[in-house]
Image 1 (cartoon, rainbow, N blue to C red):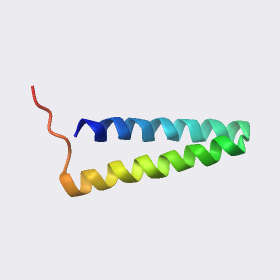
Image 2: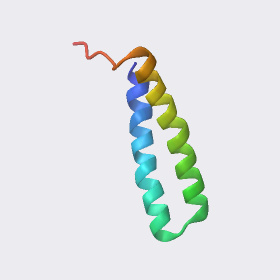
Image 3: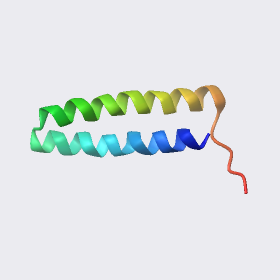
Image 4: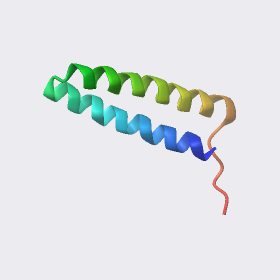
Length: 58
């Protein structure tokens, strides 16, 4: 389940990258940023929906 947390962080970074690409009007950055957000965000969301939140174990 730790992989889901990493993918969620990548999706969060893709949001910031997409916003930055929109500000600088970088078309390739927008395409890759939104693509990464779509793929990693969808994977993270569906994993949480089907398997619940990752358990924190000590």
